[in-house]
Amino acid sequence: MATKQPDWWSLDWLEHRLFADDQEAPWWQRGLRRVAQVLYACVRDLIEGQIQLHAMSLVYTTLLSLVPLLALSFSVLKSFGVHNRMEPLLYNFLAPLGARAEEIGTRLVGFVENMNVAVLGTIGLGFLIYTTVSLVQKIEASFNFLWNVRQQRSLSQVLSYYLSLILVGPVAVVVLLGVIATMMNSSLVRYLGSSDLLGWAFVVAAQVLPMVLVMGGITAVYMLVPNTRVKPPAAFGGALVATLLWQVVGGVFSAVVVSSTRYAAIYSSFAILILLLIWLFLSWLILLVGANIAFYLQHPRLTRGGRSGVWVSAELKEYLGLWLMVEAVAQHRVGRSLSVHDLCAERGIAPQAATEVVALLVKAGLLVQVADESGDYRPGRAADQVELTELLELVRSAGSDDECLTSELRMQAPIDPWFERYEQAGRAALSGVTLAEVVTAEDAVQTPDQ
Image (tube, rainbow, N blue to C red; front, side):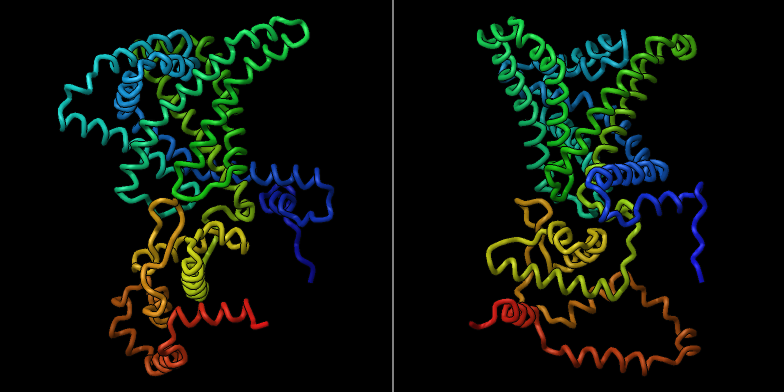
């Protein structure tokens, strides 16, 4: 019986055309189809609305944490005497707001300059650090959602990682801007820029360089903030799209603000606040869309089903639990840690399939996350102390509720003896077998005697 083809106007028809097997197509057609698949996945996620909700949440958190974040960054830069270098970056970010951007920037800088960190006291300084860290933690939670990472960083990692990122980040930006300014003001560069042959190239470079710096900063954010290992090509691809969107959306938003006078008439003095909220929302949305693209670039298998389109059976959970523990023990014996995402990418397994199992193993203490390498794990117990029956029963019984099996159900379905017989046979087959024996047997198969 012939299979009915989907109608051309339906989403099923579009998915069939986008995700059809194209191994024999030319390389440029495969590339275009790959781009179309990523765009389709991003549009589908935007329609679902979760990305917009995270962007709205970040807008609210930004309003609460913007002044403390700037105060903490400016206080560090003041100790180097270079805090004035950060003000142009703030004004450039607010530029799409039009003529009122300078007013908002001046007010923010005024608030920051009037805030003296030295006189805040212990409680005030602690609140300042907490508010700043909470913003970065909220950003990480949004990025972890996009990367389907359930485990947040520990408290010690949060304090060390975030504070170093907040304190060192502005200094690194200022140093980079200083190096670029020194290079641009050198006699050689000025001489080459004044020549008729290379003058146009320096004009183009002056226009492109800010975009390159923004792209590099976004790439660093995509690689450092999520609690997983993000590959540089995927982060760069997402940052490229985010930078282009930022330029286009910023230009359109600025044109709308300049050409429209209804906001001031309707909202009066609140108009600029409304415009600021809209621009913050668009900025966060663009940043999250770029991170979403980076996710699909790193995991192309998920463009069709999405990050929530993976269903893991109980059998597969047991298999993954045993496989991950064996791999963790084997890697630990040679002095390395287990990277779940790299292992899944190497074996062609969706990371979603392993995320829940890893969380169970970590909660039970069988796996421990490595503190100095995000996303990597090591065994939490010695391999000869973990029996296979214990491991498999842990994964199988996770999330179950024994109260669901009421006495009435047992009376109506008297299958307990048969079910117990099935479980006892499995326990007897693996009785006394530990992870150490499995790893030793696997090593013997992979490295036979010569």
